[in-house]
Image (cartoon, rainbow, N blue to C red; front, top):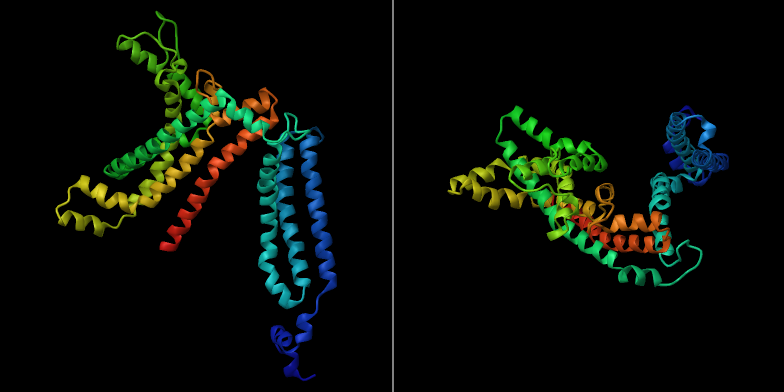
Length: 383
């Protein structure tokens, strides 16, 4: 062998030797397969142990640390053996397979955690209360004949008509007005509006429970709303029990609007700042007032962000549960679909009807998710 031949780059050597490029490495393939199987088996048993025998690990802190170490380390080892398996394949096959091989674990996890439970839920919606026998469409007939379910549908529709629109409106108003302040004032205003986003829905409901608090007539009203109402000459009210014009449901919607306004404000403020100054100056030169500029120049250019916020909040509202559960648990005509599902499953032990309710909710959400994905793709394609 000449010196020139010995110093040829490995890639060129393989290119000159087609047979070598087509040969596999059985050792690497075997080690990769065995390693991946061992890692998957080990992680599965570890996490099953966490679920069934947590007391064996001493404390929740230990369980958490082991979960992090096991999850991250296990994922790293899994991809290491996966890479070894792919490298053991013939070069041409390896080059074609490697992108899909590294996507496969992610897709597998999505299938295990999302797709499989979805099909299983649809399956259980045709079964009896303890999922031991099929009953056909009986669960769907039962829930659609149930007055509480119909009432929940009406309440959900009411939430959907009011909350997303007001969240977007408040987000736009705060974004526009805060931009008129000084740099320090803008930061302070936006921080105060965004602050509720750091609070859980349960915590927010507890806070607003103090606002809606009721004390007997003659006592000092510690609830802000009753303090204002009695100060104006009215008598104290149990606000969350007033079903007239759905007042109690509207008061619960205020909590979600308060929580989501910050999210809307951040996205829409960013979109407004991204409006080209040239278009605003051109509109001013043409004699347009600030109000006309806002409606005819700014709003059309941030339409994509408005739709994104609206659809995101719309989906959140469709699944609303915790605010209703913590405040009234669906009493006094405030029930919604998600809370009804929870009560059917855990209070009434009606798994069949509960899963049928979830399937109805899933069917309602799916077109919105499809529209949001289509909207994102259209926006990306327009760039």
